[in-house]
Length: 243
Length: 307
Image (cartoon, rainbow over all chains, first blue to last red):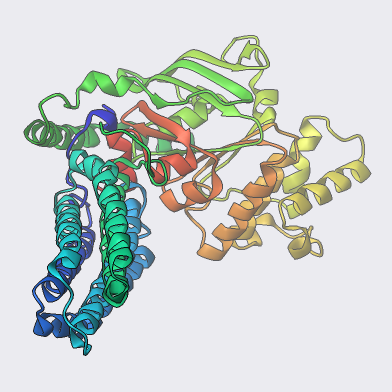
């Protein structure tokens, strides 16, 4: 039979050399570990902004080097697997997907740190705190990108291609939300020019959240590549209809 | 060397068959549990080759080739083209029939009494198994390089000159000298042996001997070169030299190579054919086979998941 009608196979089990299974599983686990940390970084950074939680912001900034450390560690172990095992076929796609996922996770970590820094600026200056109207869009965008990231990590955990396809296609919502947030922020500035400082901070934050959603979407694409060998990048940009 | 080798090829499949059935049974179970019940491995499915069996510019066209050693059905319904100016690698576990198939291409199986070949192997519009075909010119046209370098116990010069002389490709010693020189040059051996052509070929290193055998093969102007694990007795440097040579020879010849080294198949070939227990499972571009094989058995084999 061909692999076309072979929905779910465990991609990392069953090598004659069992240690190879172990090494690939280790890479998978490390990605999930890094994903867990990054997910919490994003969550805390959103809490920092929306709930004026300075401690959360500090925590995110303080943990940023941990994320970077995991990136270096995973890349190192991945290169050892490639050098030692010369992976082919699905094994090769696993190492490639891991290598790409690591970059996206690290970028998500950077965005979380950026949001945390913006939070410190928003609440650290002498001016009054931003109004709840301004923060509303951060909550919506935050929930959306957080959900996408959570989804991406679940998909990377289970290698669920069906869910990966949904996530990879379904960035319309995030994009629309981002665009309408920008329009609303523009009206705040038009209404009262004194809002401009906060508006810039908030704009940078929602841009960071939009990037996080995009990185999550990339992770879903890697899972499709890993399991199916299909490269669907750059085929689902914008203007596509829902399935 | 025929009989000893063949005995091994005949004996091996029995034990492998058992292994396959065991793995096969397990796979069936896991697939049924994992999937929606639609995807199970059936024995019959293996007889259908996945991928493109045809070459764009075929030199040899094999259709419905079956090989029997006595009662043993060693190759089942293999359809495959050998393309011009390309290297096709044949891979698969021991006893899968890849060497047997390779040997069909210049009728090396004729030497085994119990061996019977059916089906068509077409070259220049003629079936090479036709009784009209004389095997001596056929084997010059379709040359072969073996696993262990097997130079004649004669001088280096004699090793190369022997073939052209019996095939009447040269009129005098001068012409023979020229053939010897060009063949050795094309095999990348000339610089190393030009000052000792009168010394025995068996005195060369393993890698040099193998290049001598390749030079001997190309001295009789073949069109197809069959190689049966040509590097398995060589060190990595000698292997690299042979692989470099294969890549150069591709411009003039069609090459079919059997190898147990997956990395070698990936490095030297443009097309790869995967054999499994006498069936041709999958054929495709080498890059596709090694990044995204279509058949589960191919995937399992190249990633080292059974056997």
